[in-house]
Image (cartoon, rainbow, N blue to C red; front, top):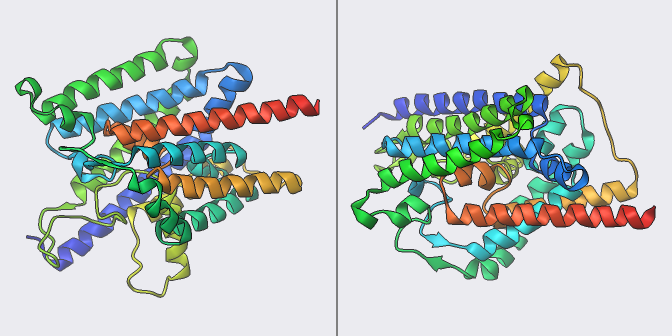
Length: 372
């Protein structure tokens, strides 16, 4: 069992490692314009699938990496918030729909908003603040009470975790780790094959964005689940994952972390408010994006165009904050980190996010057509 001093030193290592990876995430996302909403917009408006192939490449790398670690016995999907036995499919779907619609109104999802802040976008700064407040209210406030008393009541308790390897464990005498290796390989390879099937999926920026972002997801899983794992914490004598808000293994996600970042800033003098992977990850993305924007001379100050533009972004931010917490994650949290665990809830939330995004984009196009 480690001592308190050793745990403190290890926590510092975990935070610095997560911060370093998030810097890379922010820089890559800024350089390659990695964005789920942007990928959907390119498809709906122009029929261009390049950025969607980048996203699929990132997802494939994340799935392969996470399940390789499961097969090696390094991590377990059951130790994440995504793969527990309690399946809240309605919350995943409804929250995903809200988040997807909101990200279109706000010109980008939570991660993209942070990247835009780093590039000088003041509209996105407002979005991030409003999103964070709405998310915190849905974690512990008024919308949180509504969430718990309505959609979260619709749930099913599975005999095992909701990740596919756990659900299939024992069938044919095949162990969970073997299922993880097999399914991770099949799903991950399929995503990579689709992403690379066309020339636009093999461009340098697509490869950098897809492989780079996917590896950052895997890296933070390792930092949290392997480096930051303590089998017996000296203070509690229980298993612990250091520097996480959920007390479980975490990778990159940006809705609840933005809320916790605002909470940490407001109550900075409260000794109980400690830095976490989510908080340093949020800050790291902004700084990584800013560094890349300045290096490439793409940093530009940008504000709201008019009252309608302001209103759209505010409504979008609220929808993302409420929806992201209800769905248990955003395009990165559920879409990449959650999806890498092969969780049923993550597949459901991602479907909701994509459907909500497409619905919002088509609504916007119809409005433009009527105006013309």
